[in-house]
Image (cartoon, rainbow, N blue to C red; front, side, top):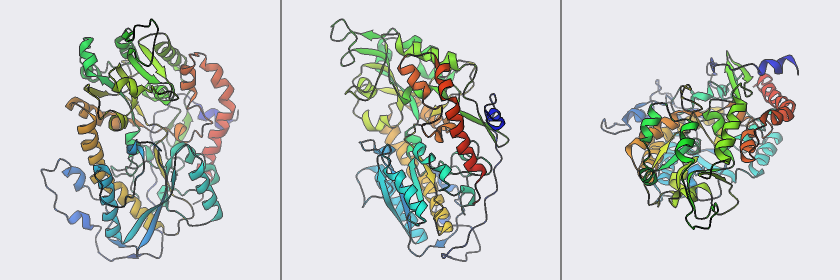
Amino acid sequence: MDKKTLLRCAAWLLAVCAIMPMAMSCGDDSEKKPTGTTASKKETETIDENDPYADRLAISDDLGEYDFNKYEYRIVYTDRVDNMYDVSMRYVVDGESADIVETALYQRNRAIEERFNCRIRLVEGCDPFSMEPFDFINRQVTSGDDMFDLAATQVIYTGMLVPEQLFLNWYDIPNINFDKPWWSDSNKELLTYNDVCFAAIGDVSLNAMAATYCVFYNKRLGADYDMPDMFEIVNDGAWTIDKITELSKDIYVDMNMDGKVDLESDLFGYVSDSGSNLNAYLWSFDNPIFSKENDELACVYETDKLDSLVAKLCDTFNIYRGIQQCGYSGSYVPWTFFSEGRALFMNSYISIALAYLRDMQDDYSILPYPKWDEEQEEYYSMVDGLHHALFVPTTVANLEAVGTITEALCAETYKKVFPVYYDTALKIKGTRDEESIKMLDSIVASRVFDFGYIYDGFKGFSFILQNQVGRNNKNIASSVKRLRNSAFNWYDKILEAFENYEG
């Protein structure tokens, strides 16, 4: 192993990063109206001080006024092919909809089109686990054709294209301001390396919030089994893997009295899928793949607690009747148990509330993923790899239009769409108590976007954990050893793409 790789595998490093100042605006054929100020039309609107979102609405996007002469802003996207619309793109709809989220998206797009004299349209979209959109991106950019302006696509598959030098550095795109609240802090912190950021997380991608992992808690069963105050446990910092195991492991009822554990009808303390829901514990236990100090990235996956972490999860999900894991191949997925009132706890992502629990009879609460132990200071939430990251192809001809419209889409989503989805759709229809509303705020604020996960390419360390726990195999050291050289080679290839970027 070379010196560079050894350095990247150093021990735990705290994430601190200095960002490169925004590049100067590039010239293009658009006409910028001389205003003498950065004030935009939006900023002249009167804001009702009693509006609960007044603080959001008052934040300037600092974009000024542009006329892009009917510029077509074209988006390549991936969309989940099921009824979980809240993890889909849905940038454009044909008109007003009975669905409040779709209506908000439609109104956002029309407002931006009118403001900048542009048109927003989709050019490609399909299931995130199909290679079609990624082949499209590779083919079009490699050919040099200016076919799209933004890829809002499944993050891991798109990250695999980075070594091909198909994407621009976000810091070279005019009017993009990562200091604004509609951009994730991770863009400047962990997703920037060598003053380059290829994948950005912005609020225009609603699923970067909707795909955040959490734990659902059935309040009726909690009362039946005399559970303690769950919010008090969380707020006291005592919500750990040992605590949820203690509370759920002995809760089992043979509902059909057939003398065997029956997923179709029995009642359980805790249910999980056997894939990414288990994988999310890696980050909730504060064991990321990569971390960074002084703009130097390091692979920190093989921590002192990794063996104990895997052993703990193997025991939790494989030896108790009250705790069950199941896959997606059958009809009984985790939310089936939970929605039928047959599970005290279920882990999944936030969007499950709106997609599958709207008609649930029992009241429920939303909690964060447990910590490793009480010594861990913070709760952390992983975002499933289905979520979009934003990439700009090197073939874009009008960078000022792309930067301005992208910034406006993120800003307007933060101001107008995110509140509709988050507070109206989720908090009223998808949750049942005020404590969960506050807890949901905290969970979203605790999201983790790990460089080693986003650029894993299904070749790194990101998915070992779920395979180990799913198969009840505690020997993770052997699995890591088999993968180590190929994983480091892949991560080196990704890092070299950042190091060799010339703009």
